[in-house]
Image 1: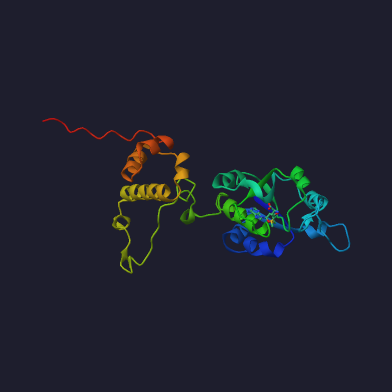
Image 2: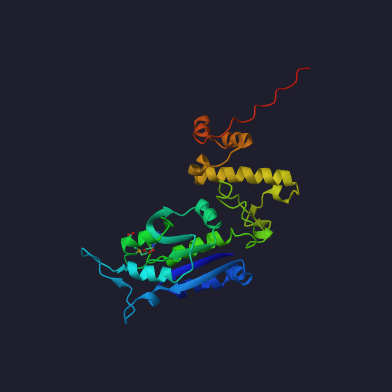
Length: 260
Ligand SMILES: C[S@@+](CC[C@H](N)C(=O)[O-])C[C@H]1O[C@@H](n2cnc3c(N)ncnc32)[C@H](O)[C@@H]1O
């Protein structure tokens, strides 16, 4: 069972993410556990003040390290204590996969100007969910919960399997369609109704390559590509120099026609 503990000043912001939808179901099935801890309960003054003015002056308030420490010490030992900060390591699918292997994750959600810098000594890593600044770490922590919980075995059924998802295979996901077969003059690609599973798999792989090349060519540097992928990428307009840059293997040699 993977346990997520959130240290926050606004536990109610996280409550729906913990209680609803697949996370809520996974909790009631005993696959994951979620605990919301109000850091204000660990302020040692009668006004439950958790923050103070910054040394050196300047706008905003800073969350006190002693409050964060007491809140952390109230929890059972964790494999990872993660502080959310725009200055953290970028959160990616690979990080989500690492975190899904752990037993207990603690998330420290900042507010105001963030935590006193000495809080870094209490954490195993800092994570950022992107190059923008939000008002608090709760939305970032909810993103990480959503991304990690779905990787825990049995949380998703086969029907929701994550293996073909964007990033899991190193590429963006292929496009999906459902009924109606025709909508405002746009038809679902014929191959998807052919019943030919090999042709469908081949079409999906090529679409995933085309999308990734068009939208996120940077991902092709670390994607695992086959010789057939290289041939498809050439057909999709990639140059041999790009293939070399992406460490793509040689495409298969065209079959020679037999002489009569
Ligand atoms: C207003 S922000 C503090 C920003 C901080 N002064 C800075 O510029 O790095 C308050 C809190 O929101 C959270 N936060 C904001 N943007 C984030 C991001 N992109 N990724 C992760 N956490 C973020 C962090 O927990 C942060 O402590």
